[in-house]
Amino acid sequence: MKIVFFGASELGCKCCRRIIEKKLAEVSCIFTIPKEFNISYSDKPVTNVNFADFHALGKEFNIPVISVTAKMGDYTEEIRKYLPDMILVIGWYYIVPKSIREIPKLGCAGMHASLLPKYRGGAPLVWAMINGEKKTGLSFFYLEEGVDNGDIISQKEFPIKEDDFISDLIAKTTDAALEIIDESIQQLAEGKASRTKQNDTEATYVPQRKPEDGKIDWSWDPERIRNFIRAQSKPYPGAFTEINGKRVTIWNADIIEI
Image: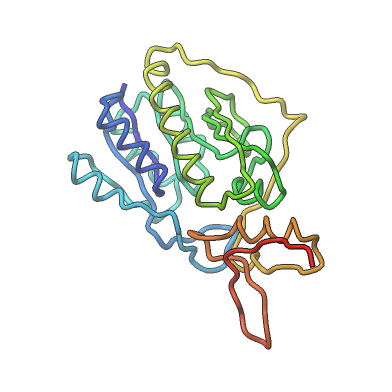
């Protein structure tokens, strides 16, 4: 199976490396995004704090790597020439248009860090922790029109523990993603992968987040404030407050009785 891979994060890079090293499929080309890039929800360039250098990976395995600096649709013919059987989209930040999704005969699939149809949209791990969820997970699904609404191929669930920070959830997501890669790529190539429609009536949506969304509202209850702080800890910019006109970032907090 020939794959064209779209990725711009550590998660995507680890998944792509796994496919290459275990010879699960042939990665014929990689499309990536620079660390600083423009996106619709921000009026200034966004920094990808989970960035991975796919150019180094491509050089290591002699795979062409193309940086996306224009509209996705502009790359349709470039992608077509690599004759992909499937497109994999992991750790990506742009909408993949229909003109691209329709190229591979086996479809276009991606990963989303939630148990779809819950938490469709942006920053699902952060929102799950902010909202005090006790569990979350990773969904491998087909990309279709709409936001994270395609048929499910596979899902992995994992707990959100009381002492977890967002870095712990990112690590759990990576472990789940590699398990899914190991289990599903060969099944997809053989046409044996499962395909389950999402129940749209159970869908919930969350918006993208920007660094300025990290300001703490001290009127919230203590548990929500603590969740808010640990959800935006490193590698993210951190939750913050203002003291005497100065911005103060808070990386950790505990609740104590006084």
